Length: 110
Length: 361
Image (cartoon, rainbow over all chains, first blue to last red; front, side, top):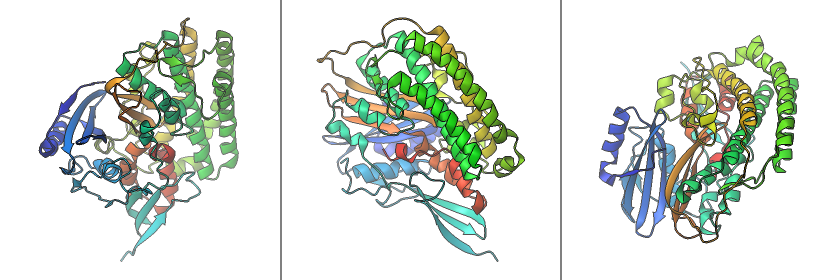
């Protein structure tokens, strides 16, 4: 599996997703990691057995646009990132507004 | 003029051993939209990286799910081994492959039983689970466990499976194969079973790709993507081809899973025949700590699972993340539900082989 992560700016994420979709990739997963200064988002795309990984570094209060308009299945991953980490993801196609996971603590992974 | 109504399906339902909720928007008896809702039992296991060291996290990974336990342990270990640059001995690679296929057989037999139960074929359900018991017996002999196996460790396996035990497994596989030939016949040939499955829940290859579908659900739409083809563990030394069907319906999903059980038996036999001698682990020194990040993937019985590990050079990881196949299959499930008859919803939910325990890590 490709172990390299391509760093992409938050404002370029939709363009990158569109480029990958145009090249025949599908979305495999999106995830977030807490860092001292904010968050690291890793988006993984696949084509057959090939993989491309994209990393986005977000500051503490920085928001990012959803890629669910490009990859419809992104809404699940993005709601998960929002509910567990509190990352502000704008324009998710199906936004559960924080009710995707019923957690005892708000944003427990933050 | 048709009437629109919203029917709540789940989180408690006879076909659902675990909770998932769907808001089904119906026009008369037709589903026009399904809105999924999960999160009833989210456990936050990934967050335990703060409290458990990277060796203990193997046990946490195994406890994500009682059916995919072995695969979760394997996927997590594989990611950490890549970060630490550990080379797993050949015998451990083969044993891991063999146990992964045993896990696939167990998972698919469980699913076949649940499917039979869902359409009221009780005797078939019990026969499927009787065969599954034989598979669990093999797990118990090899690992000491029937649900949580605790045989994976970073660097290989905790215990060897001796050659005489492997010889015994070979004869047990013959008996399982004979039993499978009998129980698989009704799923493939019975007209009543076909009536419930054929042309129900069509997922086109284009939609399957777009929605990020995984596993037998994907391969039943004619896409030959099977992560075992990347050759992880010992799959690179094994002769096999991904099993696909072009039916794109619930029958095709059943057909793919049945053929995958036969394939798993064949792969296990190949592993036993080619089993190398030697150690089953490489020692990891106490001061040997992971530093870096890696994403790995394996083919779980329900489909492709991703394991992302980020380590910082201490014994506690920054992140362990698991993307399970059921999570990836929910968008496609929602898609196939739109347009189906209300009466077909339980069967359709079952045909993705949902594992909510995995999804709610």
